[in-house]
Length: 261
Length: 286
Image (cartoon, rainbow over all chains, first blue to last red):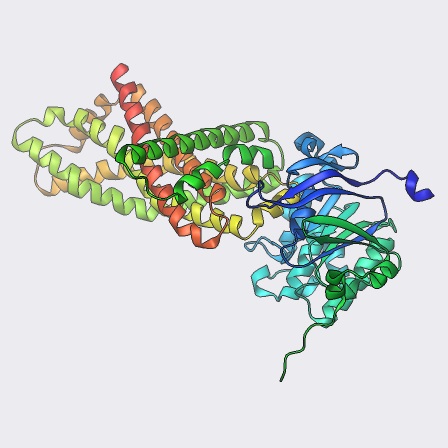
């Protein structure tokens, strides 16, 4: 009941999603979906199902080919520089990190703070010290991204997205390149963010992640959706995922094929 | 931000034209080339206006980020190139100016030396040579850096952080290049004129340094200073615009970067020659 009273933070109404390289090439049609504050959505789909493009549209980084996408009640088309504060309430973690390779991990993390608050490099570096510690990145802070493994690069991308303490965090397939230890750390950390991390004054963060493997995301409070055949299907909670008869969902829940030794 | 870039970079049509099969007739081919030229020109003009708008509108925002980047670009497109420019100035002096002075001395026409040097070196050769060297040395680097940034998704990452890519990536390069071309042209001209006289002096040309520099000073008018300044700043601005436009607009794949760099340099040369022609008209009009 309380959920229905909350205004959606992201809302898509009859949205068609094109690809980043060719916006006229439609990968998803008639998407009607919304996320309210505190939601943790897992949007699953096979490769090339349009997960990244869906997330880019949801974040307002790409205009929908058709329909309306709203962020905090405002059309993403209208989120120009005058509405920058609204825009900065959303954080985005790209698959692979997309870090700036000429900057160190500390400089990458500090850049949004430095730019938006006009801080000097030293001031911004001091501001991100705690964040780097929380994410266990302090020993790697002065190394450029190309000199660390994918695991740490992805974590540095998370640090950069969190630097401005956004209310909504969108993560594009964040677990895809991680080793087991890092994968556990991510699931635990994202869960803490979702429930309210001390660093964020225990404010629950709204999360939307995409995934091509549903198994790590098993959680009773998370909401699940599926991208299939150019359509968006809201599945429900984990028990609905497990009981679904959809062959794609079964595939996304299946153990990976073991190669013969 | 994205909308601005999209407007300037709306090159879907040009991509189709570039990838289309060769037309069957020459008139079709000429038509296609003309159409491509106009589309590119439209994109370049839009991009130049957007960049100018950002320079004016955001001159006070994020100064702690942008000012160090501008200093870095001035260092790269100015200070770091000083040795190369001094070498070119020496070469220009020895190869061209020294011989010109000797030739004029042989026919007893040293009275025309000042005006000839001003026309050849100050107005034309100095600025154009500086612009071409800058295009080759820094312009190509711009295309490759920005093209790689675009291909690896760094531009999208900037947008996701609410950072205007034009402000962060283009403005420092444009300002750095404009300041760089202007400053290096001044050094190139001074170096060439001095080394040219030294070469003539070594050949026992009967011309004292006092006479030489008096003639030069007499031939230079305030309009020369103003137009050389304007011209070099225009060279720097437009070289940066052309190279940044191609780096940021075109390649979404790493394999496209080298091809686009070649195209950007060709267009950069054309733009420099067109600007030069425009300034010749201005000189003739004044």
